[in-house]
Length: 299
Image 1 (tube, helix red, strand yellow):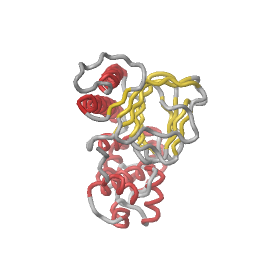
Image 2 (cartoon, rainbow, N blue to C red; image 1 turned 90 degrees about the vertical axis):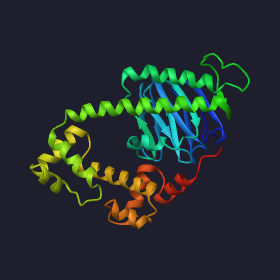
Image 3 (spheres, rainbow, N blue to C red; image 1 turned 30 degrees about the horizontal axis):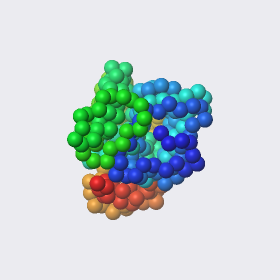
Image 4 (cartoon, one colour; image 1 turned 60 degrees about the vertical axis):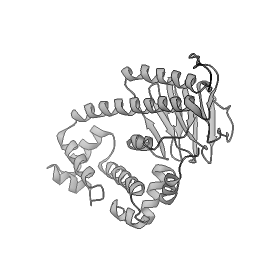
C-alpha cells in the first residue's frame, strides 16, 4: 500500500494491483479526487476507518470496504487502535459487481460489507492469496506459487482474468454470506417492523410518514417509532430516505428519466432536495453518478 501522504496517487486505471498490508497507528491516506480505479480493502486484523465524502466508517476483522473510482475518499488506522492489516486491490470492476454491492452503500458513496460471518472468512482469505499469485502470472510461464509478499501487478492476460475471478469470488462470498445473516436477523424482528419495511420497499416514492406506517401496523406513531428504532437501529424516516435513494439510484441506472422526473418518482419534494440528499449518500450529484456509470472501464 502507498505510504501515508496528504494526497496519495493511485495506480494507473489499466493495472490490477494487489498486496497484503500491515500499517501502524499513524497511517492515513487521502485522495481528494478519488482513485483512477476501484479499491477493495479486506480487514483481517486490527482496526481501520474509511470514508467517502461523509463520516468515518469503522473497519474490523471480517469487514470488506469498496471505494469506487473518481470519488473522494480517505482511509486510516483507527486512532483508538494500534494497527490495521489485511488485503487491498486496485481494479476495474466487471459490469455486474456494482449491483451486488448496492445494498451496502454508505454515506459518501463508498460500500461496506460489514461482519462477514466466520465460516466465509477463510475462503475470502484464500481467494486473496490466489488473487495475489495469479496477478503475478506472466504469459508463457508456469503459474507462480502462492507467496503473499510484495506487490502483485497485472495489466492483461490470463493472470489478470484469474485475479478478477478471485475478486468476484470475494464479493460473492461477502455479500452472499451477509445477506443470509441479514435474513436470519429479519426473521427475529417483530412482524410489524417487517410489514412496515415491506410497505416502503413496495413503493419507495410513496407519501410515507411515521403516522401512515404506524396506521398500517395498528400502532400509535410514538410506539411504532420506538419499536422500529429499537429493532433496526435507525428511525422509520431514515429507512424511508434510504429506500428512496436506493430507488433513485436504480432509476438513474436503468432509465433515461431526467433528474426532476427521478426526484418525483423517488418521492423527493424537489430536484434540489433530491440532489443534495443523493450527494450526501453517494458522494456525487445524480448527474455525475449517471455520467460515471455510463463510462466503460478502460481496457
